[in-house]
Each structure stands twice: as structure tokens, then as C-alpha cells.
Image: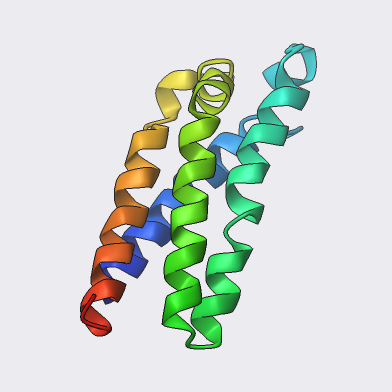
Length: 119
């Protein structure tokens, strides 16, 4: 299961880099009219992981599975908006991820957790 957590951290890092490119760090973001929307969708992707984090830190596997499923549904439902935020990010070639990568990562974590409770 450590590999799945590592993949999730790598994915979170990619989202964070994309957020950084939508900050004052990147001067092009200051003139990009989409920066506010980009930051909203990208930060939603990260802050909504808190339910998974809390349930895992409390060792509540069933709640973790529920939180992961909810996150997958959220990312799937808002995939178009998130992908648009990625495309509207300055220097999009620096951004090497998509929503499906995150969903795949969460599914791998879900599958690993399910094995621990024999679901």
C-alpha cells in the first residue's frame, strides 16, 4: 500500500506545481484572466483530499473507502473544469498530468485498501 500512497503524493505534487504556475511566482498568471478559476479548481482538488487523510489517520478503512469514492466522483463530475484549468495554466507544457491520472491513482489506493479488509 506504500506504493499507492507514494503515487498519490506524486500526483498531489503535480497539482501543486500547476497551482504554483497560477500564482505570483509566474508573472504570466497575473495577466491571465482565467487564473482565479484555475486556482479554484486546482485547490479544490487538493483540499478535498482532507476527508481521505482524516479517515486514514484514524485508521477507519471503511470511511477511507467512502471518502476515496466520493473524491473520484467529484473529480469525474468536474473533469471538464479541471482540465480547462490545466489548459489555461501558463506554460502548460510544464504541466504533465490529467484528471484521469488522479482517478487512476485513487482507484489503486482504493483497491489496496479493499484488500486489507477482504472486500
